[in-house]
Length: 363
Image (cartoon, rainbow, N blue to C red; front, top):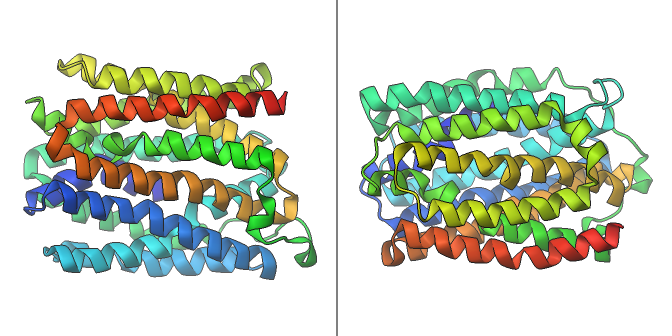
């Protein structure tokens, strides 16, 4: 359910906000709130969950409360009120992904010992959300987006209740999150920050870029869906990929592919080409995330599994995502979307340096 809603949110929320009359800077602020608040709450509540061994309880409670916060999107229209709604729902749902990933890692031996094949179900849900919403947005316009976001929330908390409750390690073994930042972890987090900071145009303004090119409004949902279809294939063979290429090497490859992706995104204008370039999402997110989860399991003690995943999310999707989307929002009206993607390519190129250093450290 988490990724089903994300399949609607990512391609169409910027388009919906633009339809309300919000400008690029306001859309950038609202987009930047999501990663900042989600991962700030994740690191705080993740530490509490590890320390008190109440991860399952925190997960279900925040999932239920956050789902209720989607309801006001059905009638809220003003920027100031939207700001309050975005703050509430993003803070409460910040726990979801890192806690679910930590639960999967803790119980991987019971769940088939293949993280990739479990994670691909999230990708399939994303595809259903993105592809399924495309014809509805084409038929009814962006105004239907809030309804499409509210519906998946109904069953979210009840489904999460069914997840395993146990946590590895003992309460006294859990360390404060900041003590987990070793030199290798710091280098990894710098890489995470830069790859996510380079994704601001994709996460916040791709739908607007498509419209600026004169292409149909349904294309962003279709593009996201196709990109994630390739992601599913990668996750299906994830264990083989990591057996063939160590996590540090795979992260370096993803940075190079991301530079190529954003450069081509700034150049291509045809409908087919725009879609095909975004297939490289399989590197920017999918391969990177697969390698990152495996690497964190090596760098962080078992008792700190939730905090380790939360640190990764905080620095990447939180700080990096916030900076990326806010910067993209500040620049998009001034540069235009094509030039903005060129800027993103430069940011990703800077990330090659810590990725290279991380690879050498792990070797």
